[in-house]
Amino acid sequence: MVGGFYFGYKKFESLSFESNRQQEQIDILRSSLASTTSLLAQNIKETSSTLSAALEKEKANLEKRFGSVQNQVGAISGTVNTLEKLSKTDPELLQKYSKVFFLNEHYAPERVVEVPSKYKYFEARNYAVHASVWPYLQKMLDSALNAGIELYVFSAYRSFDEQGALKGQYTIIYGEGTANQFSADQGYSEHQLGTTVDLITTGIGGTLSGFENTSAYRWLKDNAHKYGFTLSYPENNSFYVFEPWHWRFVGTQLATHLYNTGQNFYGLEQRKIDEYLVNIFD
Image (tube, rainbow, N blue to C red; front, side, top):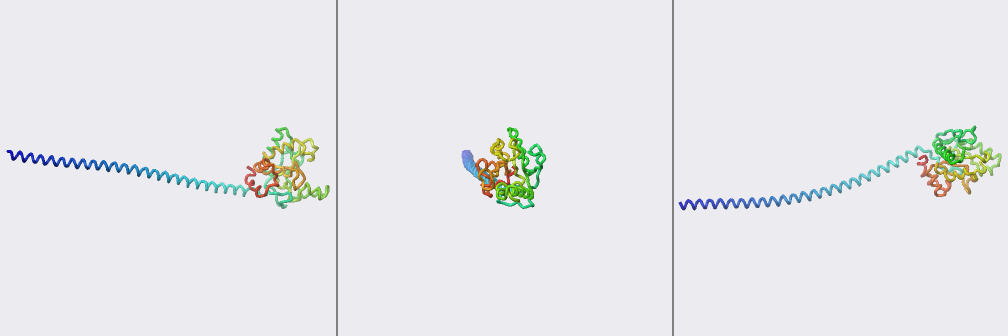
């Protein structure tokens, strides 16, 4: 009986020991699993952070590269638009004439429009201007009238032959030396461009003489640039006598530049003037 009890006790003791050993192994496994899980979680967190940083960096690089491409495309597009505008703009419009450059007998503005009677000093005469210039001229004349200043067109577009005939008349009347001081030869007149007008006001007897002493001239000096016009031959210019009535359209940007800097159109280098051609009708 004692032997059986002893045997049973030993068996129980063996089972208990085995159970404790298995529990220890389970605890070891759990601890190892917990450590592995923690390490894995840390690795996942670090990997995620590294990946996120890499993605943000790549995103920034792509945005930078895309922005650069956009800028390049924008620059190319702007250049194409500029070239397209220039291809449609008469390059003669901002050239220096008046004894400098020459317009041949075949040159004429691409299109001219008749000046309405209400804007002409002599209503029976026909005056025409460059079609793209007329809106600016009309606005200037209307603005002057709103300010109490009467301004009228006294002369406008002249063809090559018309300029030749006019110069011939002046030469006969005044002699060649005197005529050359105030009248251009064929091909050298700004009037052939269709962008130039002689303006007059009331109260000076229907002639241009004395225009410089009028309120109309003073108004033009202060305001013509707003409408794209500049005085071609101011006092002491090296081309012709002072012509306060002779105004040429060069575009608001160039006219304003000349006004703000106190410069004369013929005093600028041609390459500087050419920079304004693309925006002459803006």
